Image 1 (cartoon, rainbow, N blue to C red):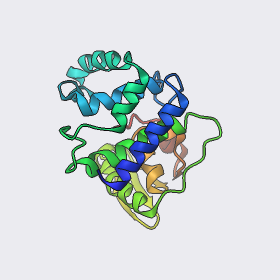
Image 2: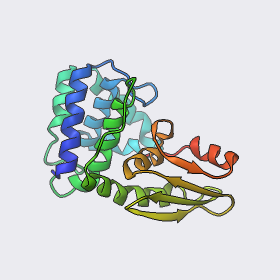
Image 3: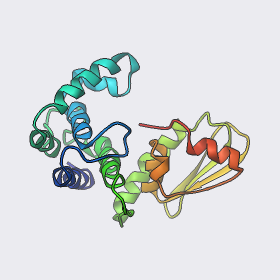
Length: 209
C-alpha cells in the first residue's frame, strides 16, 4: 500500500476503535459501525460494491452492508485495518489511486463529527496527492453547474469548470476542496466568492463520491 493510503487507513482504524461503534459521523444516518461496514463491503464484497455507485444495485448493497454492520465491531475494524490483497481496490497496484482519497475523506467523516475539531496539518505530499484527485473530481461533478466556476488550490493549481453564467471562485487547500467536492460542503473550510444566490446553490448542491 502507498504511504498516504496506509497512513489514513491506520489512523481511521485507530479512531474507530477509540470512539466505539456508536459514535457519530457526518454521513447522515451512519454511526461509526455503519462506516466501518461500508469500507469492508467496498473492499471485500465485489458482488455488492457496485451498489455504492449504481442505483439498480443499491438495495442489495445496503442489505449486505447492514449484515456486515451486525458483526462484532472489533472484527469489522480489524478488516478495515488489513485489506485483502486480492481486492480490486486495495491490492498493491491500485491502493494509491483508489484509497488515498477514500480513506482521507472517511477519516474526516469521523473526525469532523466531534465537537471542537480542527483541520489537520497535512504533509505537502498528501495535499498534492489529494489535488491530483480533486481536480478531475471537480471537472466531473461541476461540468453542468450553471456558473463560470474557478476552483483554486493555492500552490497546487486551478481549473475552470461549469457551463457559464455567474462567476464563482472556490478556493481552498486540496484537502478542503476534496471534502467540498465529495458532498461535505458544510464541514469543509473553503472560500467561496461570487453572487450569493449562485454560491448558495453550490453550497447545497448534491455533490458526492
